[in-house]
Length: 197
Image 1 (cartoon, rainbow, N blue to C red):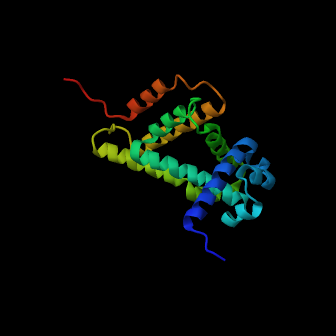
Image 2 (cartoon, helix red, strand yellow):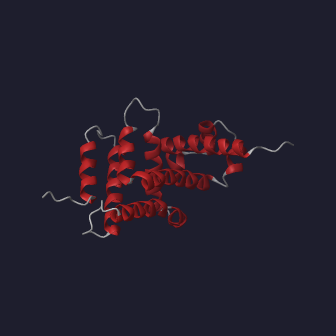
Image 3 (tube, one colour):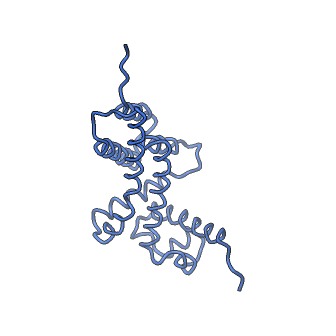
């Protein structure tokens, strides 16, 4: 039997994650049955669970994938940019489906409240975004761009709370077209204020 290339395996895994993201967003964790996952991915249960041990492992991999993508943006451009990107994908001209991402994020939040086993497994994976945000803020402080009268840990928590609020706002379907200036205020809040002579 010929060997399957790593590129093929990676593409199949991406296909599963993308389909599962839409399925979990639409039906929630419990409603994302194996049959629905098969329909959303276009693959058989055997193909899906060849890559992921079970549904929870698939959901954790999906949530982790989203967290890693966000952490990458944070490392390069900051957490406020993640929030700006969320506003951009709300525009009808983009091809991404923010509701899918938001659905996954909200499902993670729900399961953290109600499922102690999931909470324990997710704790191992959830620190990437916090770590990336903190490291970015420390670099900004060293460069003289970040206010120095508030501890970086407090600023990290502040930005994460704003992100959670934005996610909730978008998930409720509230208008987002006027939130750019709000994010400007958030960004100004963490910057070092330049004194004019």
